[in-house]
Length: 51
Image (cartoon, rainbow, N blue to C red; front, top):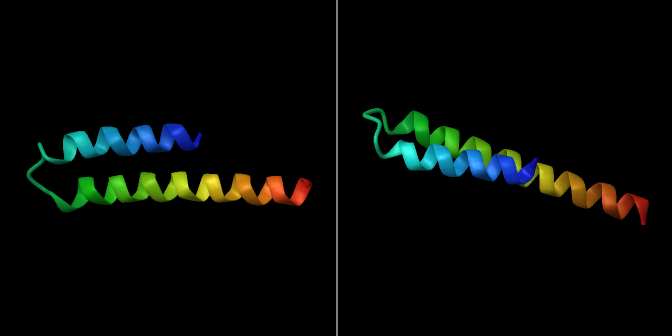
């Protein structure tokens, strides 16, 4: 799921430069990367709780 979020961020970043409104696509990139980071952190916390 985190990999998918990073892929979505890359896709959004690739099209961000083609858009006239620069702020919105960059917010999408930031949102997807934040989602990926949250998912990785959650997985780490679950792993440490099980250990």
